[in-house]
Image (cartoon, rainbow over all chains, first blue to last red; front, side, top):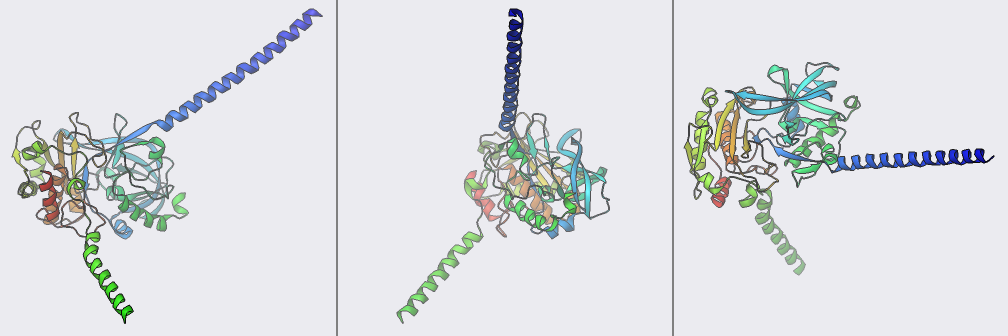
Length: 219
Length: 203
């Protein structure tokens, strides 16, 4: 009788112990996840300028459309890369390379489903800094983009007017003036443009949203 | 009668204020400190800038454009801006290049670097960075594609050399301004009155 009572007490203690252990484990895991989320939120990105460029400033969307060989709705697929331009054995320029899948064609000789290589005027350097040409923000996996492109050498597609030829339809809010060259990853992810010509970018983006926010663009 | 007189006076006042204030509002541009990046080359550096020219500049026919651009900034009144050519790549503060097949949509670019050879934090936003070198590139492929005339190429060279002096872009939403620091396909053979005033203030 005594031994069965002892066994019951041991059994109950084991069950309670296991429950407490499990609960502690879950709590620890939750803490770890919370810490990871908080660390992600605290991570910052420094934006550096690849230089100050002079190029055409487009006052209307029609001008951008006229200069583009291709106008497509597209999404990012595949891995990113960077490429150096070498002149007389010296690297004088670096840019990003991104592969996109065409979801809809508005202008040009490509088909839906085609993959294009985009020469992106922005990239992450070896130290994790984001290098931008005139505020161009690189494309993200979740984005749905309207791209205005012209074909360069090596079949790389050039984004018209650096930041004036790429617009993310999933970020319909217009951009705000930036006051700091450093921002959180979360802030960076919510931006379609990271430069000083906010007025110019917004002027074109408004027109793009009005004209290209169609069902076809979001496929 | 008095009411009519009052209205007439009020209308006159509005017209006078409009005539005086409107051009100021329309022609707003950056002057003095606001015309410059938050980091820029030192006064000593600007007074005697050594420059090196890559062979690509002659190959693509940009030698005279760069030469004119340096001379025009050099001649800005009341500003100590000086240039001297060097054959030493390492000694040069400014290095001039030209390229034909760049897959980036710009006519020209000026790229300031720090002493590690890294880019500076966005000089429009960050203070304190030291300009160690500046690379200037003219992009023949872009200018050919967009049908740039010789005076438009000259404006691009003047614009990029303006960046070498620490000048930032003038606002592009303010209509025609007498400055080469506005972006775009424009015709200039010399720096503008706004540019002269700004470099005189700084250097």
